Length: 293
Ligand SMILES: Cc1ncc(C[n+]2csc(CCOP(=O)(O)OP(=O)(O)O)c2C)c(N)n1
Ligand code: SF4
Ligand SMILES: [Mg+2]
Image (cartoon, rainbow, N blue to C red; front, side):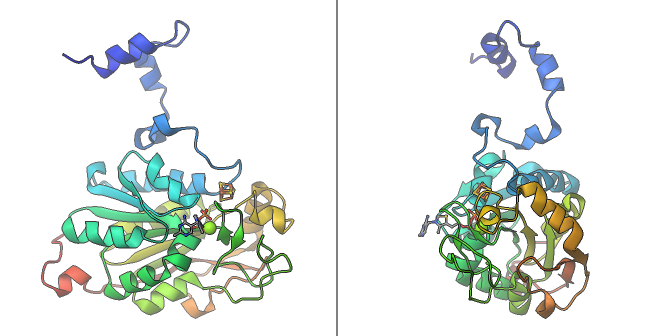
């Protein structure tokens, strides 16, 4: 008979470690949905991604849906690592292709709650085509887009979300392109739930994630989060803490705002809130195989 988890934990424990039962009691509640064997994570100190993951884990618990009903899919990037850290069915897919994987999984297993957790570059640059078509079809999936305004993992290059005039490693004199307004992009394609918060707004972010997961239809939560190492440094914005202070002083809650008015300008006010929450038949409803509530 193979040894039980407690047996092996006891066997491997150091002589000074507390007994296994005590260690279990001391576990942080979020550890239950984290793959502890993968820790420490790769993210820089004061990066905003970790806060998004913490809120996501709480949101999952709040939905009351059993964990085995969730699947998390990420593309490539710093945010793309999320799929590897959550103790759920998860896929770390190719760059920009998280939504096609999610689409296949959703169509094969409509009873699953499929969540795509990825970066702005993955979802809006290389994966932009998949994003707009998933919204257009009203696939019953949830997208969590961590927008740090750049390609973080590959060195801080310009992304289609970089604010006008912001400096990046590939726009050292400032970005002259106009960025995508992510909520407006997906809302205009037919998304049924769209919200934006920042990694400062942990409770609002958690609530939005919960609502998005429970929404029947295409839902997207954009989270503005600091890349303290690359975006902040290049633009002399200070540390992740300074960016959080900036969000604190400059975010305006504008529930129900017209998504056309949600452009983000460099270091200007950021509109946050829930902008879209509508009912509409999903892709599977339209072909007569919709999930019954
Ligand atoms: C097909 C392909 N093209 C380019 C890359 C290089 N690449 C990896 S991650 C990435 C951008 C990631 O940016 P984002 O999705 O915003 O994630 P972040 O690191 O900022 O969280 C790029 C361009 C790749 N891995 N595969
Ligand atoms: S490079 Fe930026 S986005 Fe990536 S882990 Fe570091 S702070 Fe976070
Ligand atoms: Mg990014």
